[in-house]
Length: 410
Ligand code: NIG
Ligand code: FE
Image (cartoon, rainbow, N blue to C red; front, side):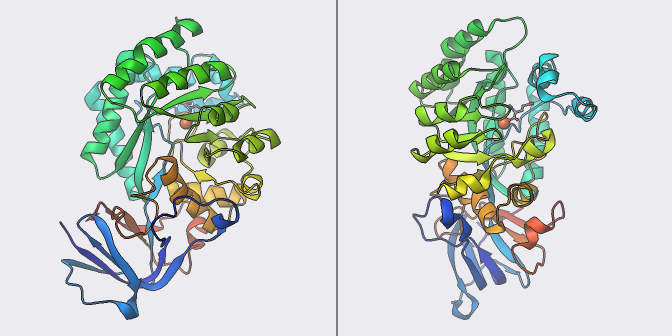
C-alpha cells in the first residue's frame, strides 16, 4: 500500500489527540491547526504528523509538496439520501412559482414521486446513478457518509436501496453507514396504520435479517409520522439492533427532538423549527443536534438557531441531506459556507461541525473526523489559500485540489 509523505503543509487542520470525540459549546470555536507541518500516511492510516523542522527521515513511496496549501481531515457527511433514481427539477420549478414542499407532497409529488421512480429502476441503474454521486462527493472532500433508504416504501424496494448503499461502501473508498428510513412517507393505496404495521412486522425484521442497516430513522412531521408512531417504530428498530436518528422539526414543531431524546437517538436532524423547549430537552442528552443547511437553503426555510444551540453549551453537526427533493447537493464545503453565512457559525465551528461532530454522530469518532495517528488516512489538500476562512468565504468555488481516501490518492 502506498506510503505517502505530505511536506510543507501551510496548515494541518484539526490535529487532535485520541479521545477527543466531539466538541460542544465554546469548544466548538477551537480548531487546532499545526503550521508548516508534515503528514505521513502509511498502510491506510495516519502514521504521524509534526512540524517540518522536526521531520524525521521517512522513505515514503510518494511525496507531495503542499506549499501554500492546507490539509484537512475528510468531511463526514452524517445525513444523505444518496441512493435515488432521478432528480426532481419539475418540483423545483413548481416551488419557484409558489408551491410549498407540503403542497407538492400532498399532490403525490415529493417523496412518493421519488418512490415511483425508484420502483421502476433496476438495481444496476440505481447503483450506477448512486456511484456517480459517490464519486462527486469524494471529489468535494467527503470520506465517510451515511446513506438512508426511504424511497422504496415497499419491503422489496427498501431492501434494494439498502443493498445498493452497502455496495457503495464495498466498492468505493467511501466509508458508508446505512439507515433504514421505511417511515419516510405513507405510500399511496395503504392506510397509515397498515403501513406502520408493515414497517414493524415485516420491513424491520427483513432489514435486520440481512444486516442491511446500522440505524433506523423516521420522518417525524405533520402529515408524515407522529411522535407516538416515531417512538414505536424506532423502539422496534432498537430491538433489532438499529439505533435511532430522527428527521426532526423540519417543517413544524413536530416533537421530533423530544422523541429523539426520549429514545436515545444518536442524532436529531434538520431543526429548522425549534425553540427553547427543544434546546432544553437536548441539554440533558447525548443526542447530536444536526443542521442540514442545504435543505433549509433550497426550501427557503428558517435556518436552525446555531448560535442559541452553541450558547446552550450543546454540540452541533452539519450534514448535506443530499437528496432529490430538498437538497440536490452533497457538496460539504458549500454546507460549511451556508453554516457560516446563514447560521452565523465561525469557520472553526462549522469545520468542527462537519468533521469531528458528524463522525461522532455516525459512531466513527475512533476512526474519522480528525488528524489523529491511527485514524483512517482520509484527507484532502486544498488549493493554495491564505487561511482556513477562505474555504467558507469562497462559496461554490473549487477549494479542494487532491483527495486521499484510505491512504490512496483518488
Ligand atoms: O431530509 N424531509 C424528509 N426527507 C428529505 C426530503 C425527501 C424528499 O423530498 O425527497 C429531507 O429533506
Ligand atoms: Fe433527510
